[in-house]
Amino acid sequence: MKITKELKSLPKEELNRRLNEMKKELLKQNVQANSGANIQNPGKLKEVKKNIARVNTIIKEREEGKNK
Image 1 (spheres, rainbow, N blue to C red):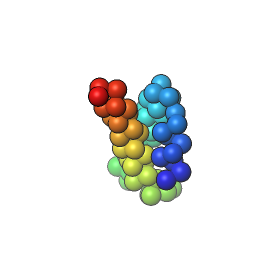
Image 2 (spheres, rainbow, N blue to C red; image 1 turned 90 degrees about the vertical axis):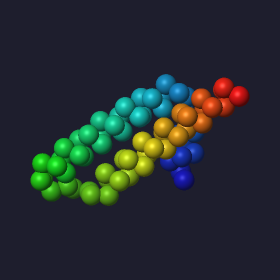
Image 3 (cartoon, rainbow, N blue to C red; image 1 turned 120 degrees about the horizontal axis):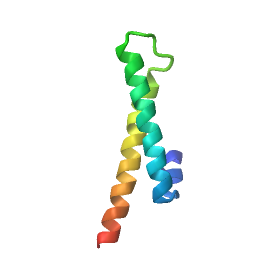
Image 4 (spheres, rainbow, N blue to C red; image 1 turned 180 degrees about the vertical axis):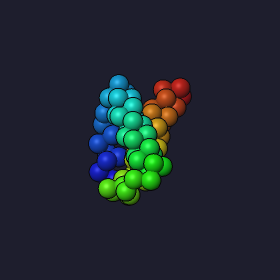
């Protein structure tokens, strides 16, 4: 809940920057998981995916709000 409030207050440029960072983090986590290495925090993968979805949702909501 805290993350969502924080993300909603950010401008679009900052949201896009954070989205790119999260995608890079997801890629890094996926490579680590698929290489057979022990993942330091297995829950981090799920958390990053959810945060990416949150950012995408906020961006879509703003675009729909402007189109109305």
